[in-house]
Length: 260
Image 1 (tube, rainbow, N blue to C red):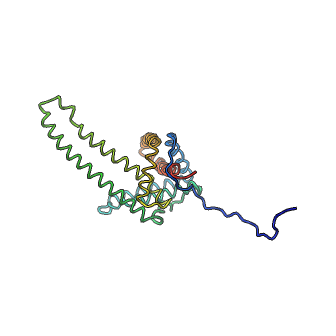
Image 2 (cartoon, one colour; image 1 turned 90 degrees about the vertical axis):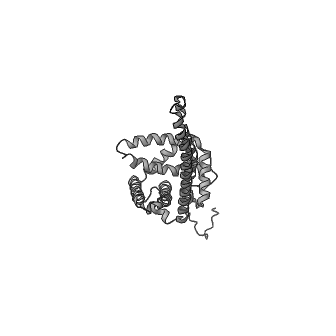
């Protein structure tokens, strides 16, 4: 005999909204993930090739227009994180909904706009500090280089030492710039997809990149090679590579920060 309650209302399954995973502590990934993030980014690109290419073209045109207008170009640093947030929404929709829509590009103007603008302000402030340090070092080293050049005119043995100061300036700048890029890389995704505050997103992005230095090194080598290839046909390859690398920021974020 059936034990089912004939008077019980039939249960219906309620579809859960699609999600790509819960935010967790940054996870250490294998070196091979450096290539996988790009390959998965290409997979997301294929879910809406025309939409992705259209978004990257419109984004590039808008940024160029803003960048060449005096005074207005100051706001470039503030709107880039907003658009990057839109790209991250497009990548998420490509991942869990089967494809992006062109309107995703402007999602950052509707969601977490204030935090994304603050993100841009923090980035701008960091860039300004980096430039100040750079100019100060170049001024200090440049003065000593000039003196060294005058002294070495009658002493050929000192010639090999010329330029070492400038090389040190470059290394110091690189040592500052790399951590800055690590803090920036995942921050738009963490803000718009997880609602983190700007500074928390910065520090979380930095921790995630720091834990995955080797995968990122492999990622950078592959991306550099692909950029060379993409630039050969008068840079037309970037119509594909641009969206793929942008989507790969999401796939890297998903692999490092989301619980699977």
